[in-house]
Amino acid sequence: MSRRRLVWTGLVAALIVAALLVWVWPPAHRWVFGPGAATNHVVVSGNIEAHQSVLSFTNVQAPITELPFDEGKAVTAGAVLARVDSRVYQQQLAIDEASLEAAARQVAVATSNLAASRSTVASDRLDFAEKQRDLQRNAGQLEAGAISRQTYDLSKTAAGQSGAVLARDEALVKVAANNIALAQANLKTAQAKVALDRVTLSFTTLRAPFSGVLAVRQAELGELAGPGVAIFTLDDLDHVWLRAYINEQDLGSIRLGEAASVTTDTYPGHVYHGRIGFIASQAEFTPKTVETHAERVTLVYRIRIDIDNPAHALLPGMPADASIALLPPEK
Image (cartoon, rainbow, N blue to C red; front, side):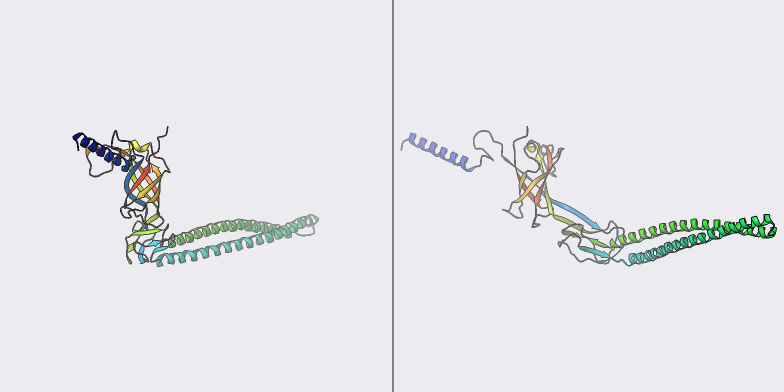
């Protein structure tokens, strides 16, 4: 074989290899020849996060008497997570319920007193009217000389006394009405105390505010629970998201609500479906603990990718990657 033929054979082989490289290497990631083309996807990395609530008792302080769940247990909204000794709060409720009953009886007594006072006033008015008629009749008879002056004076005194009794009993009616208002106010106060006692008594039972998984149990039976003393940490695994950061040059090519494909090293080959739920409006430095100066001064924007997690496979703190399609920048 001639030298020229060998050269041509080698050149053809090189062209074939180059063509194969161009064919198998996706142009969306890299070009072999010429300037690099922009990719049509961006991959961001971060950690899975979820809504976490640190649960504690409210407005009560007592030893823990019941802890039916351990860490890692799934609970539904309203499930009883813990109880404390409620005897003191039950006794306070009993005392205030007795006071409420007494206040209700006081209202009944005051109402009866008012009715009796009004009946007395009605009788007084009849008596006063009769005494007034007697006085007028005696006045005419006195002028006619039919009765003595003493008889007339006695009828006048009787009319005056009847009027005084009427005025007194009318004042007592007002007092009885005021007593009813006071008794009703005391009744409302007693009702409010009982309602507060029942609310406080309900605080002796700690319930799950939403369905989730108990991530941390921070108390044991017999410990003194109180406001601010953590009992459980509850994770809402139905609503998880990926916190990640995107470079400034890619910011204009993603949109709120855009779909994202999320993968983890824990479950290789499984793709979780997500959506961009938040894009920060302000840039920040690259959040790394160890980095070069060039990386440290790079500005990025925080994004949140909401992820469907029906099987609760994604857990808080789990590292994950998300692939997002880069869209044409908005004009």
